[in-house]
Length: 340
Ligand SMILES: [Zn+2]
Image 1 (cartoon, rainbow, N blue to C red):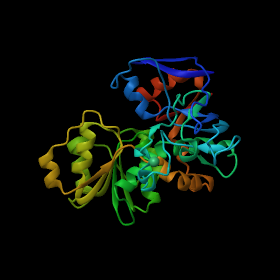
Image 2 (cartoon, helix red, strand yellow):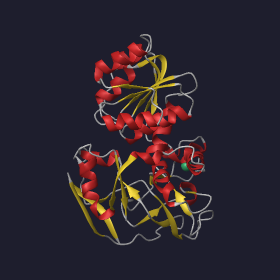
Image 3 (tube, rainbow, N blue to C red):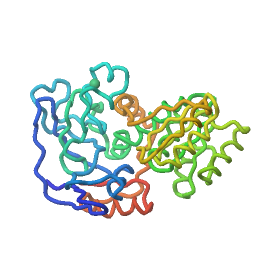
């Protein structure tokens, strides 16, 4: 089969790879009708994460079950399934508490790389959620978004304690931040302030329910959020970037007693202890337990209550994945859908 492999900074190749096979009796193999590039794939692409050997890329996936190991009980060939970027047993104490990304058996979900034609999924019974029936083609982008960016934006909103009557600020206008806006509205926030200086992203933020746009960033952005909230700061702030500046912007834009939900993969973030001590804000985040939210998110998509697939603003054949990375790196595209 053919798949996308990262060799080093900005060196993405599309090449022949061995087809994945069942290695453990709890594995499944699925075929991928669509796949995509994640903002977090840009970290290794840009050289911010070191790549020691050619690495198959892609961790977001939906698809048709082709084959299962002989210990798999609930997932069957022919089903259409959605899973998350970490495989989990969904039975251990941590999973049952809703933290499947910290499962005691945690391992990469798309073990052999999701930007390909076929992928091996470990712990299939715990990891995969089947749709009620094979989905119509127009729901594929939204179901694929549920696999990571929607589930991550949703967790960020939950971690930021979003709810009715709250004012929410969102730092980061990538797919996760934009879907954090959508999640905040679904969870009942009456005011959602999207922080973005990029016109197409501002427009999408408004489509997803943002009520205000703030174009300033850093300390100026914090000052704007304070101005919009009677000098207090937002109740809930979603951090969806992962840099020192974005994290401090999130913490400083939050009122005392408020909550920051941080889901941008942290890169060289150093939190000042004294400032945190006196801020009085709650911090919660990390890799999102997308698996917890999949049944609910699939249901919302199935009933066409939400359309998170709108974050895909460029579609390319899988063999042009390199162009997709380039477009996202240069911020010409929010998120790229790839068709194998
Ligand atoms: Zn577990």
